[in-house]
Image 1 (tube, one colour):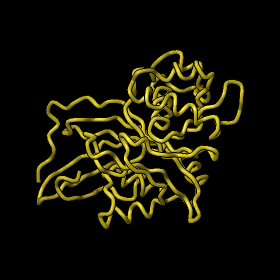
Image 2 (cartoon, helix red, strand yellow):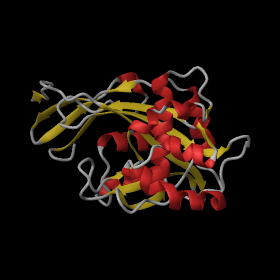
Image 3 (tube, one colour):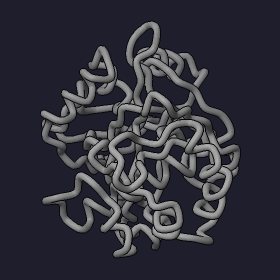
Image 4 (tube, one colour):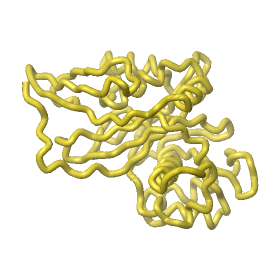
Amino acid sequence: MNSASSKSAAPPRLAATVLLLRDGPQGLEVFMVVRHQKIDFAAGALVFPGGKMAAGDHDPRVLARCSGVDGLSAEQVVLRVGAIREAFEECGVLLARRMGQSGLLNTEELAPLGARYRRPLDAGEIGIAEMLEAEDLQLACEALVPFAHWITPKFMPKRFDTHFYVVATPAEQHALHDGREAVDSVWIRPADAMAQAQTGERTLVPATLLNVEKLGEAKSCADAIKSATCSNVVCVEPEFEFGDGLVHMKIPADAGYRITEFSMPMGKA
């Protein structure tokens, strides 16, 4: 059995992923999207919304329009800004409020913002600071609770340093995939996502599958948020070995997952 080589490893790019949660008729549900087949990372897979940081996420003007960031490092703030931006671009959910108000935006307030800003943000034509200033908005960074932290293995040609956050989806906002990077979307119970991955109905990459399983330990949105708030996030950079037509993945035992070793057919890692 051969270990994966780490020679000339590409540096991982900072990224954020959002687990939008709600309580459905049969328990906890998470919003997931199906990646476009032409996307060069996890094409066709069922994933959580998210992506790499954009240049505008670092704009110092954004910091003045963030709540809940006291005591956080500059990188931690940027990650939350990027996570909120990605959720808005991909799902139309915006964790923001009018400056001076306490409640988050509702559907009526959000609809014109989505029509005006989602595509320019996604295309990099504007940064999030321009939208916040033009609409006098504040980002509700306190709504994001750290859930997991994964770094793509060194042998992969594209690598990401990805921080996962759980969020209670605002009751008066509706998530919907963007039709570009994501071609479909679903609110799904973690147990159902795992079952569909087992039968081959859905494709879930290992990091997504293990985080879906971890999320499934919670019975409600409040339970998931409370558990994440009380947990210590351990960074996971999987170790891979190849042999017998299989890829064998190992992760740290203290990372909070039920299993620490995971095997799959070659080509599905």
